[in-house]
Image (cartoon, rainbow, N blue to C red):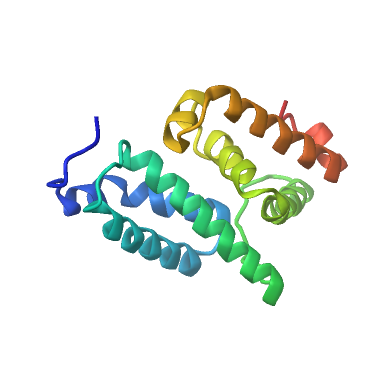
Amino acid sequence: MPESRSVDWNEIVGRHAATVCRVALRILRNVPDAEDVSQDVFAEALALRDAGGILNWEAFLVRVTTLRSLDRLRRRRKSSELREEEHHYSADPADALMADELSDWLTDALTRLPEQQATIFLMVYAEQMTRLEVAQALGVSPDAVSSALYKARQRLLSEHAVFNRGGLS
């Protein structure tokens, strides 16, 4: 049943702001960009709120955040190679360097996936959503989610040998 038009906007923002920021930050790895995307997402959601029909605010916001973050990564990739240092807490600097390189590669590789595949991949692996939750959020069948997830993993595996050791199966 769709949420009513009288949903309290402050409640929506209060309940989901941390999730939106977390998703954007995981994808973008840059606080100012994540904050900008978060603001854009909530502005977009506010414009759609009165139209109704949003069944699950969290799933809707995660999807829009993922899409807007990927859009920003694509623009960033086209304009310049920006890198924000990420802090890894590892006893071995080589492990931290490998983790950074893998994270950079994955972030870049996600921008080359078709939008639906990248969205599903991030919803499952970054947000730990079940296939059923993703299917409901995107309005597709669980089989379509499984198929897109399989294609995304296969494409990522074929693009980079490191994933063969990464345990994404």
